[in-house]
Image 1 (spheres, helix red, strand yellow):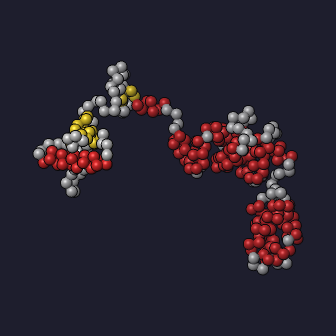
Image 2 (cartoon, one colour):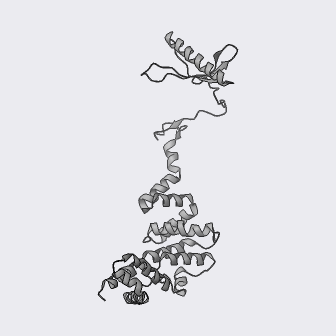
Image 3 (tube, rainbow, N blue to C red):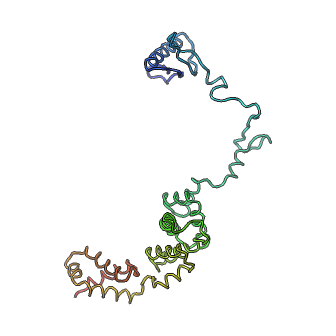
Length: 293
């Protein structure tokens, strides 16, 4: 409870405890308001203290002074000496604790790591937070970038957070497994970045490795013939074959229904088992469809 005149700052407050009913709360507040007003009008000062409600005399009584007494919520410990802090790093006295020196010895804190990942690696706040929350993922992320500085940090982070962690959650592998996934992640990230494989292939390769296959990622891709088709001659042949297979869709596209391009691309993806660079296919297919018949 505190009182003040309109337009002036709030006054010093007092707390009232040990109140047993709603009616007593109202009486205690009314009494405390009048007590503080009379005290101030008489030239006194309100003390920041804890008071108790006395229902027999309908008044509040002082319990303890918060500012001056040491027994408010703690007990002094005689065996603990005073703690003197040196906040400026001046080392003025050998018995003082140098706060700045201790701060320099602290490891990188999570908020600092998140800020570094965003500033130095260009990661989104969400990706940075996910890595920091999984220390083993963060360790692998930094190991991959140390081994291959040309790797895209965003691709590496997405592989770890979205793909590898998904396998861990499915209990297909563990982050503490004997095989160091950082080397595999680095190789897969390089292949994704150079567009030699797509994300579906990357996901498949990680699943194969997680199942216990000891082959390198490139060997798994070669064995499954999963390399992306990027050769212009092969791209041309794939697009021409799709046009021949889908005369109805081709006619619709050329009549102005360009949305059917998605169906043509879906057909190509199915036939090639997603082994083509769809951005190249889309561009080349549109060029062929625009040519006069």
